[in-house]
Picture (cartoon, helix red, strand yellow):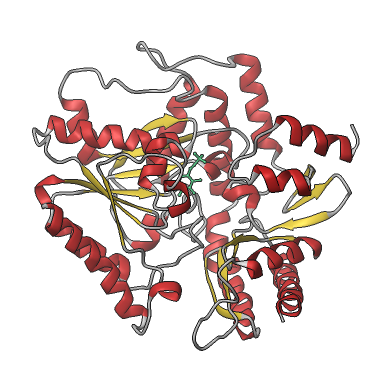
Length: 449
Ligand SMILES: *Cc1c(COP(=O)(O)O)cnc(C)c1O
């Protein structure tokens, strides 16, 4: 099939995730055909620096044969077996061991799933099981944050706090949402530090309002990813810690994006010095090469759910899929052996911080923020008042298209441009990324004038 035929068949038969089916029909899709290192290419031969690591997954880029070969060998040896009914496989045990090593102290158990959404559903099941076994069944409510992203199953989407999603389904009734720590958009006249404290105090207020005896858990991404790479003010996590320390409430950190090195530490919890009770992972655990997710379970929770008899009536056919686990093992080996995460912390992260900050001088950039190998640009009409161009987020969409034209994949979340490039990026490739982003900003300023 040629490009036009592919686009036509795509339109006729494929329903894409998070897509306006009507608009997609008009535009046609971009057909991505190959990838190498930190670059992807489409069917026209247009090569682009992938500033999004696929979808926050391909932290090691696209050329790691060790991972694809590990999958292939496993598929030839034992392509599938389940972990139900007292069975197990060698790769699943080995990956569980490795995860216990690389995750924060006192997280020594893992429940495998096929995706991040499923892992957050698993969290809801484990949270309830934990409090039931502790004989506090009245602890039922889970607090999350507005504009959070926790996946797209009913459980994941209920935990998430995205208005557009909530309009299209009926959310679970035991989940409550509080203020997000998004200073640029919602900080008003407060300084970032003041606003960080304020947003954390909103958790305390909500717990008081609901009654601590009814609150089971608080779930949060260390940094909101899909919400717009919202790096909380420095005061936020320490204050959240203080709040949580006062109450008997579980902390769930959703590390689906920030796990496996994005911040320059193994997990966002390490970066912020938090001690979660449950920790969701997916995406980069297999470098995107095979679907796999899961939740790390702390000793505090595992000791309770393992101590008493009675089956935990939950699990997925593909929990601990052996080929997925081999992909995870190969990925962690590369991250460790090649000191990829140290390099982000010591070299490429600081270099991106310096180069990315230069973009804040651009006339349409209200803020340029970054941490490790993740960054965001807030597009504005007026730098001082932080006023946007319009209510339809036209600038974001224009900037994304301009960026692709210049050979850089940046994503737009409203009028916030976000990047999360592969952790293997060199400083030269960071220069390339910043230069292309600059050109996209120039074109966007012209188009919006
Ligand atoms: C992507 C994502 C999820 C959902 O993962 P899927 O594999 O798409 O189900 C959950 N939480 C966060 C923070 C994510 O970024």
